[in-house]
Length: 429
Image (cartoon, rainbow, N blue to C red; front, side, top):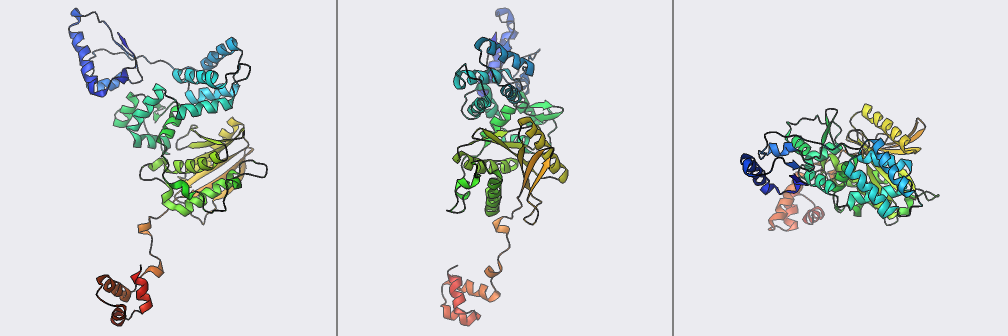
């Protein structure tokens, strides 16, 4: 017997179903069932962990992912049959984002040629791929993607740490969150570390965990004289540096309120920048895409505008060594994308407004624009009271007398020596 999509069985009846199979096994002379094949994205280990497994002997068969050559071969078969070509960078990008996951490879290719690049006389381009990726990130009812998101939501805090924290997490099946997420196909081990092996799944989770509009957008524009056109050059190209300078000014104005640190923690800084950039780029007619190049604690924002691309790499400052290493990572990424310049945004709890917060440099022929965003803010309740708001001992007495509502201003002034004008000020505070 084979049961497909086995993980779809509700948890409330799973144990009963499994023990039914166990009873059949014990009375196998009365049944014709000799073997049982469960097909799904979860592992048999999850059934065993839940103490519901009826199995004495189990064997797990994993469908291997396509290699890059196999993905090329699969697409070339389509090209031969249809005479519609794929640009080489589309095939590479498709493999890089799926890592050859069979279901995703086939689904993406199908959507590209059946919904987007429908003219067989025209090639499948990167523009088509970006549109397909956006569809899979925000609109696609794909059972594998939905399963990944649903399972990850149950361990949201752990997943945010995995996605955004700088330090790698050692893989151990004895750690409850890791064991559960691994058994449900969300995470895997990678050189002894915990990781999400399929980049498209990382992007889906970052998109799924993105907070809804929380009221911050009304603070993005600080003056009625501001227009979004100030972020365009005279040649109608994006002025990313100007946009990032305005982001730093926004953070300076809003302080800790710019970050949802209570709910997002490690991801707060990324979602803050992502929301700000996306707000303006969409209004300019462009699109933003989250990228997840290799390297812990890194996420990039790719901006597409009028056929061109810009990359903003984001990182949290830990020390000068990692700070410099991030520049090198950005240089390599720019090389792979064929871009001449990139933007490096670093959130720092160490730097202050007195430090140099913007710099430009040429590294291996690539121009790097570095923007440091100070993030050390005091909560309003912890801020020192301004001198003009502090009360003298006499004023404190006067203030208390005012609260009693039994003394006139003249009586309070005579009793405390505080001038009547000052008492009037206290009465309206």
